[in-house]
Image: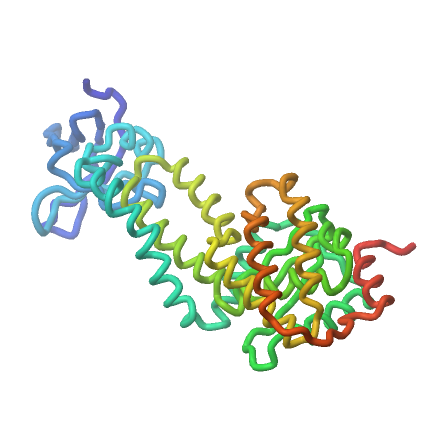
Length: 353
């Protein structure tokens, strides 16, 4: 069936630098070109190549060997019509892509990409990590309300001073977000968001320190950057598979990818837990309170939105933490905050009239 709708376009013959104005139409068989002198051409769908992403601007088609004939159509309506009639080789599941999807793609996801991402994450400059982290924060929480009082900020800085390794290149920055969410999130570059709900549920400053030490280790071990590199690689494979077939699917994928930056594998969570205990021991903070805090999180996790439930399998993690704490010799802990400072921190989101 031939489409009756036509669009204005520019035709380049590949031999001269000038173009000719033409009208074009498309159907499931290919593209028909009509010149101003009344003559015409028909490009069968198997013989031309799409050289421009349909979502990025004018549609650019090439035909023949080098130098190819070129057709440029700068009309969004043509792009939509043309997308419906894309050649099968540009769509999702040709036999070759099906083989890639079924066999190679899962292997890359579970073995190849994470291994390479973990290696390269440690070579990303700190300044780049900071920019990436801020970008993700602004994308996911663009309208966040940041709580700030002088006593509350002073208490936060005391926590950081005790917990942050002296030899770290990261300058950790904490934001308290006015939200009922019982959680904390770390981002590449050293920024950590603590939600008011977590402060309210924390039984002590030492308990909160356990969560903070865990999030700090995600930063120190480049876990967020590793996730970002993995998701970027997956995005590239995704575009290879879908081509220009479905812009909506690509948009959905981008949203899932952004939230996936905040989710870690069991291996990364286990590593952050174990190394968090080391931070607590070095800072002389009671590590048993970390267990207390995680039990609170375990009770709260069923009510958390799945997208933000970044700490799965809490029961198993608690068991591992208990074993690790039991292996460490007893030590004398010191209060990380005074009762007054802890109260100031817990009340940081309260507005005093």
